[in-house]
Every structure is written in C-alpha cells, then in structure tokens.
Length: 412
View (cartoon, rainbow, N blue to C red):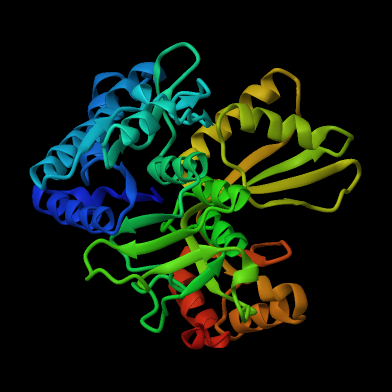
C-alpha cells in the first residue's frame, strides 16, 4: 500500500468535533487506498496548561519529570483520534512514542530523534490496520525515560516518520491554509505561495515564521520529504495549501519569497572585551551550555586591545545569558566592563533563493527602511536572506514597507 503521513496540530484537534473532522480527512485518504500514519499534537492549550502546572509545582524542575508530564497531552489526543476512527469503521490504533519506539537522545525537553524502527507499525499494517495514530512531540531516551522534542516537535515527528517509512508525502494540517509571503495579520496584501523551496522555508521558519518547526524542515530537506502545509478548516482539495519541495520542482524562483519577523528579540552587548584569540569561543561556549539561542553576532573594531561584542537572543533568555556571562567573568574565562541588554528590538528579514542571481536586494531593503525613518541596529546576511534588528515599534511598518517594495503580492 502507498503510505501517507498526516499531522494535525493543536488547533486542528482542539475539541472532539475537530477531532471528528480530522478523522474524516484521514478516512478519505484511506478510501483512496493509502495506509496512513497520523501524528497528533496535544489539544490546543493543553501543553501550556501542563507546563504551567510544572512551573507552579517546581520552578527548578527535574527535566525528566517535565517530559513525563507535558508529553501526556499528545497521548490523550492519540487515543481519542484512534477511537474516533474506529467509530467510523476504520481499523486504527494509537501508539505512544515508547511503543514505536521513537528512539531519541536524552536531552530532555530538547531531544533529537535518532531512529524510528518501522517493524512494529509495518507488522500491524500487514495484519490489516489501516491507520497508526502516533503521539507526536515525544520519544524514549537511551535510559528508558520519556523525552520530548521541544515546542513544535510534532512537525519533526511527522517528517521523521515520512522519511523512515518512505511516505509519498507528509501533510501538515494547521490553522492556516499554507505558507504566506508574510504574516497576513500584519500585511493584508500577504499572498499564499503555491510552492516554496526547502531552503527558503528553513530560513523563514528559523527567522520567526511559525508555520513549521525549523528542525522539521531540516529533516525534510535532508531526506527530500515532500511537505504540504494546509488548513484543517477548509474543504478538502488535492491542490490546496503550499508544497515545500526541492527548488528544482519550482519553475520560476522569486527574488524574494517572503518577509519574516521575530518580535521577541533582545540585543546584548559585552562592552570592552579583551580582543584576543579564543575570545569568541570563551563567550559563546558558556552561552551555548546555558541553552541561550544566539542568532546575530557582530564584533566591533578593536581599540587598544579591547572590543565590543554584540549578539541577539530571545528576550526570555536574557537573564540566562547575563548569568552565563557573569559566571564566566567570575571564573576568569572572560573579562568585560559591562553587559547591556536592549529588549526593545525586533528582527525583520527578507528571504529568497532568487537572491543568489540578483544583485541589489540589500541596497533596496536598506533604502526602503531609510525612507520610512527606521534605523538599523544590526545586519546579518546569508546567500538567501538579509536580517536586520530594528526598534520593535517599527516592526509592522518595516514588514509592510518591504512587502510592498518587493511586490510580494504578485508572488506565485
């Protein structure tokens, strides 16, 4: 039998009525002759509720127990989905991560999938099961403890299953009907893309677009898994949504495909750091060990053997970064005069594979921001993206102006 993977996010399974609606979509694919692996998230709001209970019980919690608690939401959804399918006379059963087993590293709350053996589920398909409903976001570590993959981890679970089972396609059902040129809530001219290249989607996901988890796109690109992002609230249509695929499958590449933003950014600067070999490692090593997700990095010009080092990170990691730097300073690993955090910034980025063959994108972006009176604090670039840090109050204006300037309303 050909096989499909279908993933339903929290809003798509938020109520029993929505679970029934999702189950009907699965039933349609079964009727077409597919075996289906369904990956489910926890019902909308459930994970936040569980995280809140953990924090209220133990602010400095044991990460192993955290995983045991927050993974339970997906187990409930998987069981309810399997029961719903059975009521529709579709042979289905639920699987928790350890039953597959989804083997992961033991980095609790941020585990990575190591292996998904196919034997158990394949054997059940051979016995007549038509749908395997798998709890997303979770697995089992080398020590036999339940692990979780981090927020959005069900996307990664879905892509990993598609790769492991050689699925024809992996459909990600969510509350949006595809990937847009930017957030439609900010820019009413935002347009849904029919196709987008893996690399573009990876950049957009890492830069703040919430449609797909970054690691899921990385996996899809590595194993060439075709991803389709579509809404669980619209009528079924085989051509619906946005296909995330290899760039060779896209006839005409846009110079700029999208404008992404991240609202909750902070700019941190270490003032007067000794400018010597190894100083970057001495700074960013402790930050990495503290779990600080550093993004943009700028080192200023050196004067009299001292320099300033600036980097960006999420605002909720500022205190963690400050502690890591204070501890490194106390241990004598680094020496700096002061650390300054600016928590009033946002990151805005333009992304497009077409940048590889078109000059002038950066100049155009900077001119647009200048014309709007928006000052740029930090700039970073890659082959297919340009990111800037600006004052947060100008974020929406910047997104709208850039979307207009690059005429993304005409994107296909």
